Amino acid sequence: MIRALLWILGAILLGGIVHLSTVLVMPQAATQDAYARLLPLTPVNAMVPLAAPTAENSIMPLMDPAFAAAVCRYDLSAGAIKLNAPLSQAYTSVTFYTRNSVAYYAIDDRAAGRRAIELDLMTPEQHAQVPEGEDVTAADRLIIESPTKTGLIVLRALAPEPGLMPMARRALANAQCRIGPVQ
Amino acid sequence: MRLLFGSCFALILAAAIGLGATWLTITRGLAFGSLTIGAWTARPKSGSVDIDPYARATIARTGELPLGTGDGVAFYARTDDAGNNFDGRCTFTISGVTPAARYWTLTLYDPDGRLVANTIDRHGFTSAEILRDIEGRFTISVAPRARPGNWLPTGGIERYVLVWRLYDTPIGVATRTAKEAPMPAIVRKACS
Image (cartoon, rainbow over all chains, first blue to last red; front, top):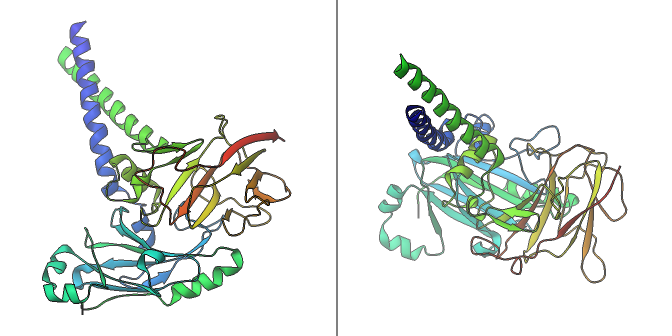
């Protein structure tokens, strides 16, 4: 009897370990995460508009249909990324995701405070190589550190009414995401 | 012989417990650090690097991109205020006030996060297009058939999820109470 209880106790402990390890491994093992879904649709280091979600077809689940969206799938191994996103009239935001869909930085148009959102995205190593003086003189240029070499930059512009969707799409069409030196 | 039988039994039981618990928590969505106001639940930490491992695993499985904390916060509802599950064949009304935000959107999804087909091609409302009364309050009818005013069609599906997204809002990780974030009330009306 006691022996059977010991076996069950051992099984529960082992089950707990199995549970925790599968939860931790899941983000690496997932084959249909957002990055994998966008991989065939997006070139690397370029901003491309995403198709609006419809009832029949949506690139990712739970996309907000009131927003026009564009995505830049980045790879920082060739150098830092320069992002330039003109603002639409209503509400524009930029969100940075790691390879595993963790949103590590997000900024909206009001926080950016100008006519465009301008950012430099780099790895911590690349950031360390930026000469210090330039960091100070370019204080109005935001530098974001990416925790992973690859990831996603998602630009979203709100269409407050359906009729304003073309306006939101036009604003996103001028956004740029490219490899460039930090000035 | 007994040892072999015991260890086999223990291993099978361990796998069942471990994988079963993982499946349950990932599909049901275990809510660490969640903020619940009325029928609405948000997980503000999911939009930051402080996201918990369960939310990470859920997001990896569904393939969604969570709303970033500097962008906004998303509240989810699957039931009305009394705990009745949403049913696309019934009428539910959403009314009251919303927390401070520059813009908000309300969207109806099926349980898998897809938009629902309907005759007027409406999947939600934004704060700019909603009809309000003189005092600035609004009522949204979530119903299978047309209603006067703000009608959000359900397409007659059995279960759905409502997502209320607040953009440029002070509501976030530090928010604790309904006083800071008054969410609209959801009430079930007639079923057809």
